[in-house]
Length: 120
Image (tube, rainbow, N blue to C red; front, top):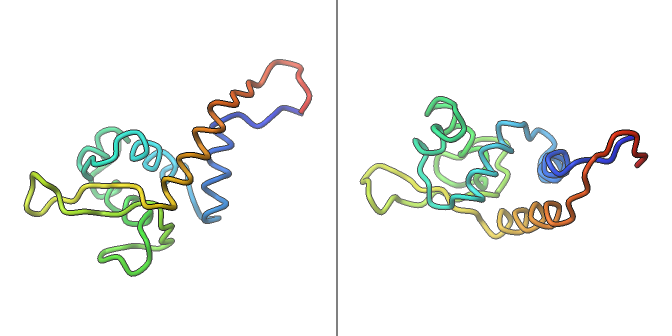
């Protein structure tokens, strides 16, 4: 049996927040973790997706009750008015999102590689 690698740990930690979390959510969240303040267009570019998909994904990462939020309302990201665009919004981690980023960072620091023939 192989050990779980860091990417799988990150996905499972996100699934612990919400069981419906997908790789799309994880990819978007990881980019937001590394680039707080990026906007939806920038998120679409780095995630290699459409702006509509990036927008829906970002809104699913927000807290329930946030204007324009979408299910599953993971509460990890907040949308703030953009300092450079009247209609734009920038993406920042919430307290819960920062805690999850810390958990990701801990898993990366632990660096448990999967080696051929290694048992869990």
